[in-house]
Amino acid sequence: GLIVKRTIRVDIPVDSYPNYNFVGRLLGPRGNSLKRVEANTECRVLIRGRGSIKDPTREEMMRGKPGYEHLNEPLHILVEAELPVEIVDARLMQAREILEDLLKPVDESQDFYKKQQLRELAMLNGTLREEGSPMSGSVSPFQNNSLGMKRAKTRG
Image (cartoon, rainbow, N blue to C red; front, side):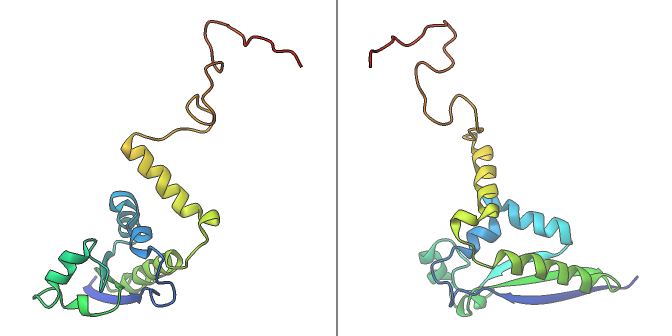
């Protein structure tokens, strides 16, 4: 079928939640969360606007330069798809739904998605400690003692 290119814009609610790390939530460890959204939807996802460049000094330097006009706009996402006309709109809507879901701030104690991201980051960094492994919890010299030594009994 005919291949068309379409772009939609999804606004990021930074005005309502100025201290929430939307960019980190969208990108995930080493950009993997964003890459998964792209792989699942066959869309390209671009974070644009103020705050889209990690280094504020560099962002200030780039502001006004060709290709960086978006830095004068509020933080937002552009979703691009270059797909057959029959499926392009469905894929863009799928991407929009996933992204809008990620843009709903969640209290950290309830944020399963962030816990998954932190776990993935620990795996990538080689610092993951599994629940129930000898490294998790309190590390006592008496736990998992292969010599079969026991603690000295103390009275009352």
